Image 1 (cartoon, rainbow, N blue to C red):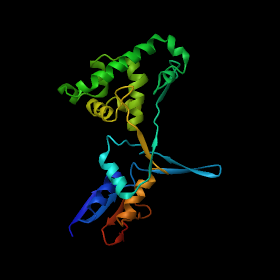
Image 2: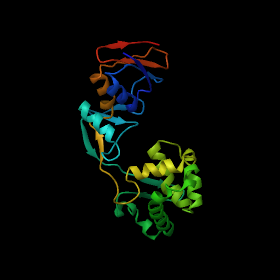
Image 3: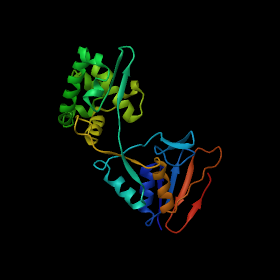
Image 4: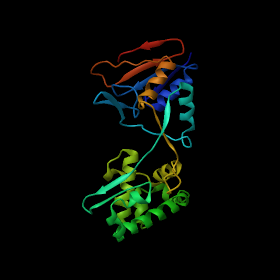
Length: 249
């Protein structure tokens, strides 16, 4: 059987190992002392119950992730519907709002009389409407997020109150660093995930019991296992259809 190396034990690496397990003798390399990558669940005790909290991968939708849905079905990973929310608090400007509905946007009723806030919403609507066409603009392919906002004159309030907080949250990136993020990549992500309108959002789903269920399922079904040597920053797991093997490096 031919040998195959997969770098990274996140959901992409584990999914690949699962689907190719009958064709290759697979070795997965992972630099961290745990398996899962972005798929990581921390269990926090709360009273008499243990609450699973995901620190990375949390949600998915059926429209954008057909291959992930196929993997979940094959592994019988239990999933359920969930909601995603977005809120912003800007202390210097004494501004606070949330998304998803008119009432949440104006949960702080002072926003009704805030002219800057209304202007930001107008720019947000323009951003959403122009995003799809902008993806076909050759200039957009080389722009950072900051350059894109400046070129189209969306304004600082739109940038600081909406786009930076939303983008930073989605990509788990510091606000100052997200300004250098490729504009086209971000716009494509917004488009694929239905984030370019008030009524375009997809139904969100999550894994029951936390994303650890995804991390564990491929190892159970593909007969894979991993072990990390103390003091070593690299795990190595070997997978095959017939047996599991442990390695320390």
